[in-house]
Length: 293
Image 1 (tube, one colour):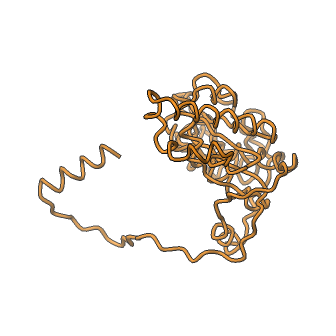
Image 2 (cartoon, rainbow, N blue to C red):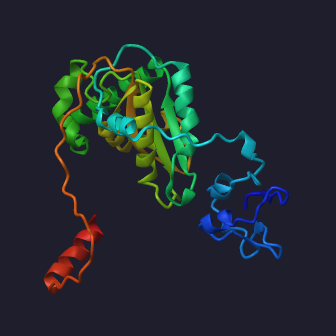
Image 3 (cartoon, one colour):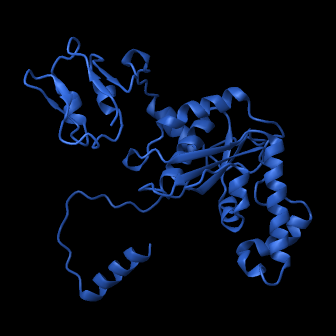
């Protein structure tokens, strides 16, 4: 349980912190001031919503002081929408490293990424130098060629088999010449172990875009981590964690002159819900497909 302190001299008894607490970890005392609930000290998930919502800054959270926190400053909606529309998967990168200042900005953003149940079970492996990235690149290709060339192990290489000649000619099919990579791993005990890294990389992708940095979701790298356990050791994935997904990152060597005109996804606008009568066959199909997803 984190240490939550309420300054009664600042508390105005508005109850905002109590209403916004997901786990009912706060309640009113006899005088109407907010206090930590005595029901179960393990309920709190450390989301800091009470700390953030208090209009007078009366709450300190594990020695975190309100005066040290930044104030929300939302961007113009159209600017954010244009940022999203202009996002492209970058597969051509400049032969230069991302500046330390830009890496520090990305790292500053990481603690604010949302996770399921506020379970802080993420680990970020940030390949910050081209030399480290080249080591990973060379090891991966060398290992893949061995797997593909062996008749007993080739069946495990899957889609990589068709790239054998490209690998032999030095074409970087997997990492696209990217100078850096970010791999997000999950604690195996995390309730949302497979989703949280995707959320994290989505935030990283858009923030990187705002800094003029290009990114690309690297499904090939994900497959390589499954084939080559040593890769996890090379990027210092801790015990009890599993690498879930990787993102290539670097300054783009290409400039897009306009946004694409994207095809629209099907959208169901639900304004009211009516009971649907279906036979047992359609019900069985729905249950089956939900189970195998």
